[in-house]
View 1 (cartoon, one colour):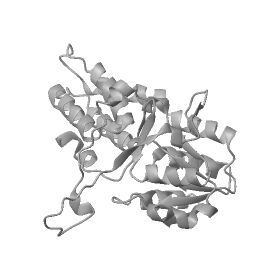
View 2: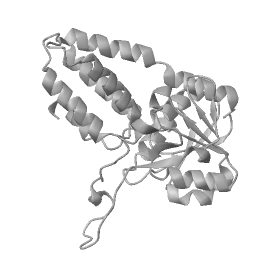
View 3: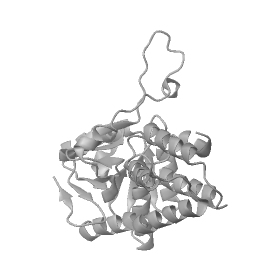
Length: 278
């Protein structure tokens, strides 16, 4: 784990932010153009996949990198590693922006009250695009327990000069009549469900109950066939002390992710057409 210690210990970043950290680490690691310790790199990449199995961006990038680092390769120079990372970044560099543009072609968010959850690079990308267009969207940001990473996203969106309301996701029913729609990111999407931060299932159900639309904003590299998805769905329990301490003889469960049926959503917007509708 020595190569990516900060990434392994990150419990609040979304998949997009973590992927950027990984890309930056690899670019730094390869900048000297010395010979890379290939077995160590491959081992750490495999451990990253196992540590963040729900993050499709990691899954996609690391799978492509491991294919590049084929078993037939004996030597890897830093320049070869940085060339791969730059090529990958160039290929996918505007995909989030294009997905956000597709959404805004279909849905006006000007003066709309929008529910957002957790800490998603796709949502922040959408907020930046709205800011550039000078639209007056009002964001309702959940706290996103137990890691409370919603506070990070709330501040980032507020720094773009939007009105932001922060509240615990369990209190959505108190504010539901002020909210027009929900937009969620996704950690990965399969044929019948998507994976996102815990709380997304209940938030989607409440929105559905009050006949308010739920949209998902994601890139096509987050789509994983259901057969392949079965292999990456298992989540290791997170530290129990995040939600309870001193609870003797009580089994404490702490998980960060859950699956949400696609039937709970109205549309998924990606960088490509057609839009997915359920």
